[in-house]
Image (cartoon, rainbow, N blue to C red; front, side, top):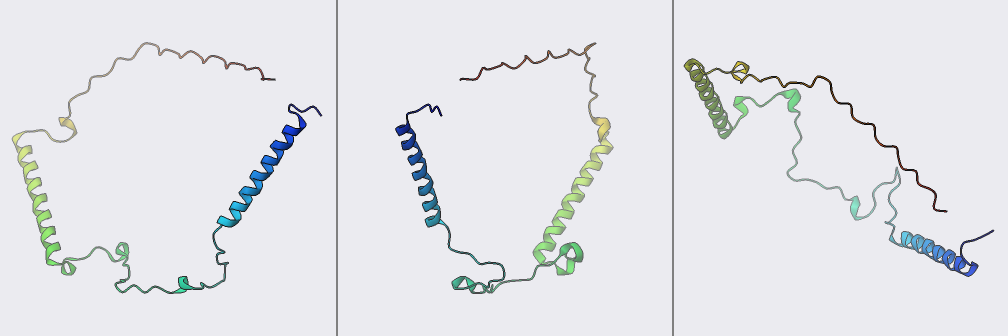
Length: 138
């Protein structure tokens, strides 16, 4: 075979590659995490302790039970709901007053858009140039 480098240089390169492979394998072995549990094995050691939460509360499914009713709300929550209702009523009254003054509301109040003139025939983009052909380096 015809090699591009002298044989001693090839041997040095091959040995450097072999040393790098062995070093990577050794680092992988020494830095691998400790053996973990297999399926069916129980937890062992300090991590086997079961944690008990002192303030744990079961989750409720509001989608099935529905939202909390007024008798279940705290006084602060009831006050917040009443304030929200008053704000909505005031906004509705203000909108009604504006409508009575003659201010148009809704989509008819939007300014009319003028149509944009279109060119008679759309310009066709020129085809992309053919790709450059590169010759192999050898």
